[in-house]
Image 1 (cartoon, rainbow, N blue to C red):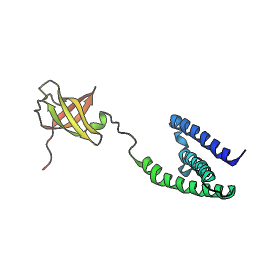
Image 2: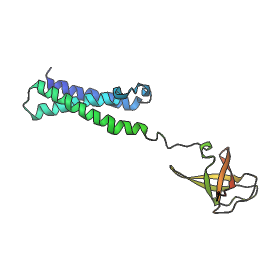
Image 3: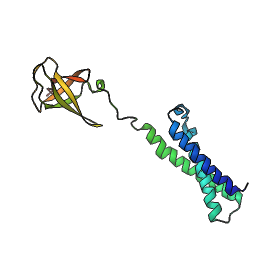
Image 4: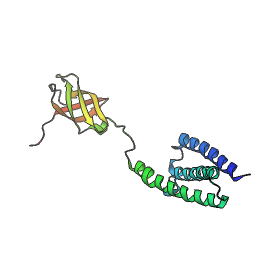
Length: 168
């Protein structure tokens, strides 16, 4: 087998394995062991095959020089990928999801007045955006439009709120 075919088959196989890894990454998420991360390994092999194939086509270098150069280029690119892309991504916020219970203690604003013994609506601004929720007065009190409220409790998707009075 010629080295050119080896690089080309390597590209095809790594491409297929990468697709499978993307589809089943959650199932093998525990394999993340630093620099031996499957993403880094796959990218290293991909960079070796791609660089080797390109160098074979564009240069007249010997096979040994091409393989060594491909290994060096791949090491540099994999290092850059790991330290400048994968590490920052792993420390980024994993999810923008929230639970109603996580909004307890937050301050919101009444957008539909809350009548005595009735329901109104509040909005809460979070880092994920503006969240609109059904609300009722904590002690069945009336809360006017535009007032700031504090979320005291959540039951069945209904927020129990009290008028918010900031400390001065």
